[in-house]
Image 1 (cartoon, one colour):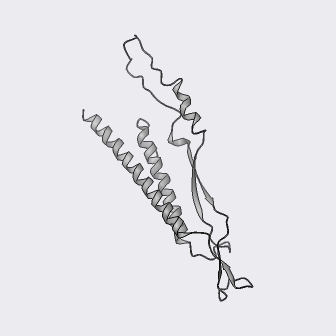
Image 2 (cartoon, rainbow, N blue to C red):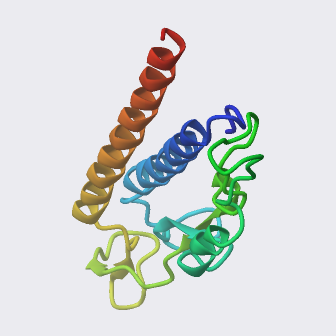
Image 3 (cartoon, rainbow, N blue to C red):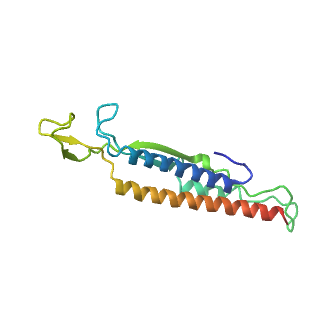
Amino acid sequence: MKINFNFPGLNISAKGLSIQRKKMNIIAENIAKADSIRGADGKPYQRKSLVVEDKQNPFASSFNYLKNSLKLKVTEANHITAGNTISNPNVSDDNLQSTEITDKSSGELVYMPDNPYADQNGYVETSNVNIVTEMVDMIAATRSYESNLTALNSTKQIIKDTLSI
């Protein structure tokens, strides 16, 4: 979700909101299917998670722009010409990619001899979703969402105050 090219702070916060919303949706799906013994493929539900990473080297690439793009052109030693801006083409919310991964670990075996999916010993493999872990992840994602929302609102307020000068 891209808002405006001229305000990269808004774009970064919007991308953060989008990522945290995706995380919360995946966590909600995990919680909803935690008690699922069999899915459409005949296997127990496998926990999903979202991995967010930078497409470039996150540390080195963020400092490459310092050498070239922070230099301002001046007509005289004491003047800065209008229209020159300090911009960073390398720092962008477009560099982030989020990938949904599936946890392939096995769930716990529960003794349910009356279940039609039980093995010859009466055990049924359940999903590998741990509700406590999911709730902790949900709280972390909610707090991150709130932080991004606060940053977005602060940026909007700064822009608004700047326009009122």
